[in-house]
Length: 267
Image (cartoon, rainbow, N blue to C red; front, top):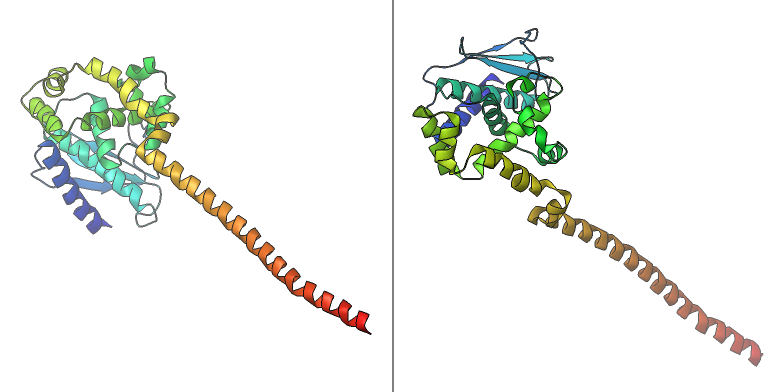
């Protein structure tokens, strides 16, 4: 498991740092496995049997497990591990960004933004979006799942502007620009307007209607209809074959009956 994590981490670091134009850590980061560790303000985005944290002051990652390390939740280990590695990359590159963006980058690059995330955010009052982006919301067990999904969604929308735009954004941050200035210089729009676009443009893609008429949604509908048509044709053909067999039997019996009647009349 450790060897797999090392290999996966090296590949992950290379992909993420190349994508954003960031520097890889110069020194290895120590990772500790501690089932009994108590994190401060413990609130996590997912109901996993493994959780983790990166400590900027100590430059270490701590993973907390509730089962043996070699049990059957390998995928969860990799997700949490990548999440914390992303935090380490951000810290070691000295990027001064809001907590929501820090967490959003970690979630997006560790597991991505799913269809269910989009559907969940559609049910949230748009006026409360800013509330869920506040730092305290990420430490609240009730709000944390929504806050993490929202942060991930915003990063997903940022990524849709292209790798070059994201690289420019990170270069601006490395130059010492504050978040809003770096964002405007890279994306060409104010972040407040970007947030409105996220609500009206990005999340609208996850309405049931748009999912159905989308290419993937339409493909799913066509596939579903194809299955129904196949079943209909199967039962229809089965019924037709049964009728043909019965007709064939009847056609063989009738001449025999007539022949018997003729022989009786002759007698």
